[in-house]
Image 1 (cartoon, rainbow, N blue to C red):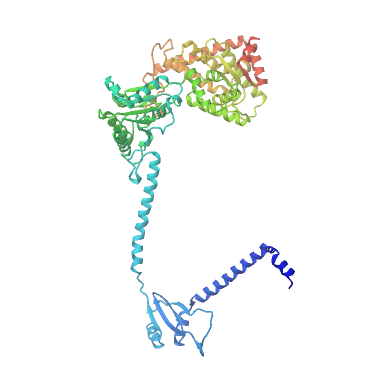
Image 2 (tube, one colour; image 1 turned 45 degrees about the vertical axis):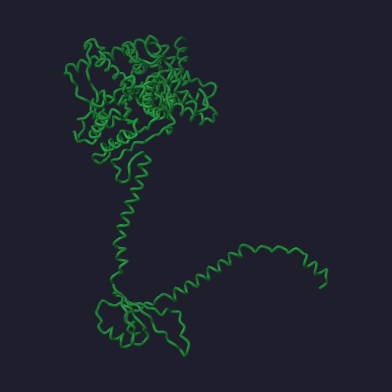
Length: 629
């Protein structure tokens, strides 16, 4: 080989090998797997003992082919003798091991036959080994203890997550959630309105932070504070604000969490909760929905041994048995103060009672501003106007309204919540969602005249609430709606206002009678409301000339049995007849007045109904324009 060829061969870069196709690797793996399978099949076949019948077994014993046997109950196993040919052992794929089953018939010659042919005889005891017996005896207990420990651990974790309980023996432990300083992110600034309630709460937090200052003034901390008000007015939110503001431990629990299926659990949990609060005094305990355990005693089916009453007795004892040096304040919330036990409301237990009313316009504006801070508002969003249109809304209702407005804005693909979305959300909350109903023209015309009667009566009656909107689009459970919005909150109703309010309710039925000479079932809800209001005027508010200034408790629910079980009336049949006559006379008189009013303004009624039939929804200014024309 020349130098140039050698140099070329040595200096040339080695060429990269071409990768083998993926199918080649798959073929190699397939062959490997088949090889392992062939080896395993042959090995297991060679290791598998032969199954012989009892007759074949005895024949092989007589032929001298059995080397050894082992008895184990009714089964018999052993090994065959290897037959040699010259110096080589006979090769066979079959295993030299065998097994057979001994018949239940006694064979006394078997042992002699085995010994005669020099078969090695062995036997295994039918009794299990000592470690097996120990395992069988101990294993169930290990499983039971393990299951017991696992359930106890899980229950302990669950109880710890809810604020109380210690394993499976923790039924009597308190479930109150403990809040430390900084754990609650709610403060008094997050509570709009309720200025008087917040002022009282600040006194409590201030006392707990600096009790010496108040003791110098001779002031004692209230033992209990009861928050009362309709649902959604902010009772629980105010308690959360106290937990966020107070620099003391805060224990929170619902009244229903005291009661369990086991007798005495409620009282035990009360003791445990108060013991925990006393150890960390000064502290605050908050019991939400206390009416679930604080109802008047003696009304349950179990008498004094009722579980709920035992829990209440324990609460009463704990609240009235505080050590003077301990500062433990009990907050409680309820929307049914009328059903609470009198012993719970006396001074020394709940010394201070705070009533939370529905928010006024200013408070509604502040509540809307707080909840609107979480959503982008468009430039045309007028919260002042929305606050005026939400008379009677609670804080929870306003939060729900803004959430509905955000959902509607998202449905329409808007980048901000505008006034149209806010108004549509308000209509959805007040009137209900729109229904997909097919209404023919005849029924639509009847609904138009019915709602036109309501609208015209509301516009013409002096003391009626101002009209806001009329629609014949089915919403909620109604086929049409006439909406009125008071100019201001009313806390005391005058007789003239109630008279005109019933007149507006009857306007739809009167309009149907006036135009179609018959009435329909569409006035069912109107009649119910009118009758209920007239009954209150006659029997409770003393607005009847015949009965005078007398109030009759009729239709009031029982304290414990609820609204379904009304108390029997405490007046005679003659008085009941007078009440019924006065109610009927009041409603019939108002209906006659409304009929004369609508007949006098028949042209406005027809024009309003025709416009409503065409447009389906009319605002207040459009209705006023039609009536004036």
